[in-house]
Image (cartoon, rainbow, N blue to C red):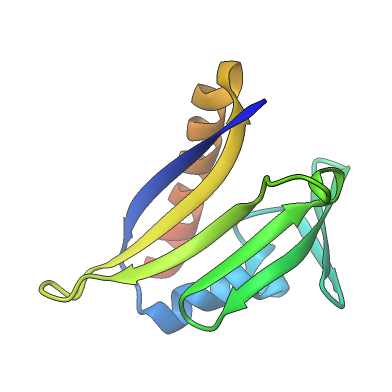
Length: 125
């Protein structure tokens, strides 16, 4: 059984640019995976020669993108990128929802923090 976990990161970017980094395969290759192949609603992510397939299950332009891993196709698990703009400050937050086994939550947190660190560097360059 996996638990739902959420991460929130304040991003130094416009929503439009950030949305392209969480939805466009070419941009995801720059921070999320070593390689991304997109075929219809199917994404093949490669990390160090290891492939994982997922499906795009929900997309709201400039708001959110939700993916489901192939092995979880018949389950409730997914990972999602959600963009939120604070009304008062106009700050942009990237909220990530994922699922992890209880003993893998800390590892998942570190993985996402490292990925967002790479993304943040791309956004300011």
